[in-house]
Length: 271
Image (tube, rainbow, N blue to C red; front, side, top):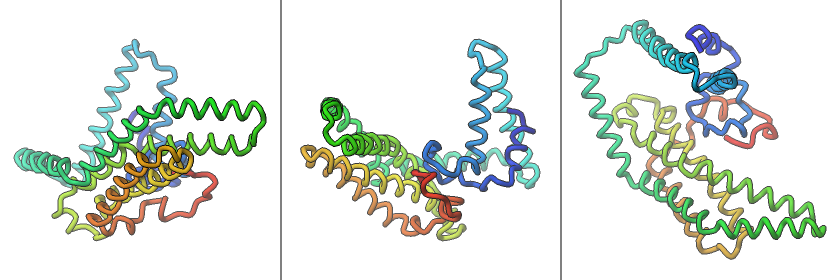
């Protein structure tokens, strides 16, 4: 994709500015894809890759050109805004950002989120046989005609719950890290509600909320796993309360599109 193609996509008046900054990246479950510049770019690049040959030098040349396009547009923006880059200031900023990242990694919220991700991996690994047995039982009951509608509904609930848990499992940590990495001085200069820290924290909270709902459904479907699922729910509840306490205005953040434009709920099961 060259610079002119990118600019043409960006000039589409139907696109909602910044909608991709505070979404959960689950495009398959989103009703706003037609209004998202990031989705349009991904679709264009995906179509281009369908005919791409990884052994073709031209393919890699296009990748290189895409990176140059981004670099050129960034340089144009800097020049247009009259920004002068001081090498020493840049180095100082990078050191400060690295320090902030280390502090965020050691924060209780990020440590809890990281631990939750590991707990999820462990739980599914230990219960792989349980899922296979439930699938076998559902197929047997379906074959002999026992409540087919209920069996299909249960299977769908299991699939949906596991997909939701898997989707947000690590994203919660990533979004909390982004929120925690914001500089306090920068936040103080911004709107007390509409700032990136709150926006990122809100996406993390949405992931936590939906994960709690999904685990609650598995708790209902697999009562024999009550204790282990409750352990995960306790961690998520602690993470949710801690995030709300650290970012008290996060829930009030208005995400472009998702919180500002009404949409047919039947067309979007995510966000």
